[in-house]
Image 1 (cartoon, one colour):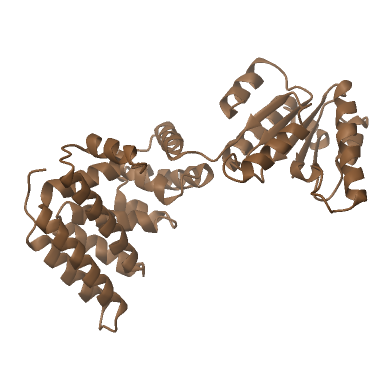
Image 2 (cartoon, helix red, strand yellow):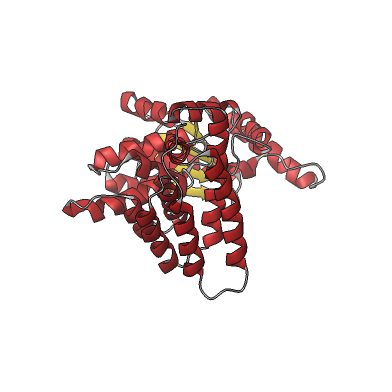
Length: 361
């Protein structure tokens, strides 16, 4: 079950005797937990006496189930939130007979409880340690198998970049925040497509824009602490468009923020290599560029594909090849003893933008 399906389920009926929250994504998990508490323990006084929290790193599953079976004098409805649910699983071989016996007791107690669950009590098991990919996938399946008696399982995988982009767009639209698609892409990419960080930063941007101020790449760079790459991408984009004045302005921001300038050159080198590949493949639009690299197994944001296309449009093959050499020389100069990083980078920008003219794809 997806988080949205779980929320719809809560709107239609009361929570069941238990649910398993499976996966590492924290924002949607917290949202669903709050929604469940609002449904099961709507009254604040009832919640104060009816909500209990357990950690299976500190207590046993048997003790949690015993608590669920205990009658409360203050609240007929109860919710038990159980974190680190993975800790109840059988330990690896060689951990001792006692650990194996405890795990067996937990499994048996869980099966017995769900044969006749306590009315009015909701158990929420949260297993957030493992992901749905790589080596964690088998471990997650073990958790799912152990809690197979739990009737409702809600999955919380890490958001894909596409889902994070849609999530950010919904939040921005709901908050009335006007932000261009390219800047929204930069924000999501800079925050690692993490929903909780995206929600927090969009809230901050909304406060900034309350007076009608526009939100652009410079504002994101200045207001979002994690958006170092957003500023760097702004420089990459400006150089790719052959915008000398804008490039110098963004460079000034990077220097004032004491950013690591070789990182900007690394991203820029990647962009020119992509552009050179697109030029050789005779790609004539951002959509073709995005599709071409997707076929090569290289996922690319639409805004990045547009940046690559702009570079293809403004630089000839010879100029792009020269730019890659120029980037290498500048990177080497930044790492050598020199009087000032600004001087090295400004000289690079002036040389790069001096000979670039619009070129046919």
